[in-house]
Structure formats: C-alpha cells, structure tokens
Image (cartoon, rainbow, N blue to C red):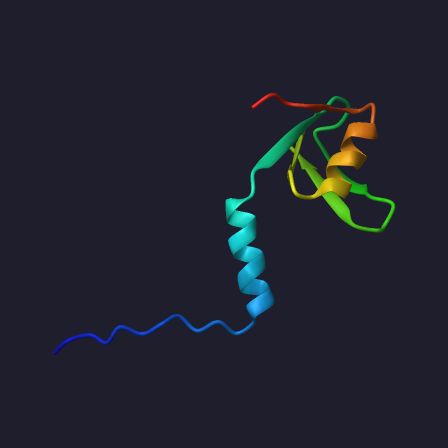
Length: 79
C-alpha cells in the first residue's frame, strides 16, 4: 500500500514565516564581560537572556544589535 504525499499543515502563516526567516538569518554573538547569566531588559520592554556569558541575536534584529553595541559590558565576538 502506497503512502500518500500530504502537504504539511500550516496553522498560522505568520508563525511559519517567522520560523523560515529565523532559520535563514545570520546571528551575532556578544560576550558579557561582567556576568555569566542575567536577563537584559531593553528600553521597549523586550528581554535578552545571557547564558554562559553569551547573548546571541539575529543581525536583522537591529534594535537588539544597537542596544548591545551601546553597552560597555558587551563585546561583539568575531565570527
């Protein structure tokens, strides 16, 4: 008996787009020079998690990149 070729079900198109773009977007990583673990609260209320002294964001997230660039406690890790 042959298996049918079914297309995947997408329940929310916006979620599917976000997953696709996130998987193809390059990331940048910053080193936290002070803490190995903490939660950063950005001016608009979003949070960024520092784990093992690192925080990673997508290059497309210009608000997070600008926020981390302005903080003296963080340095961009060369890729």
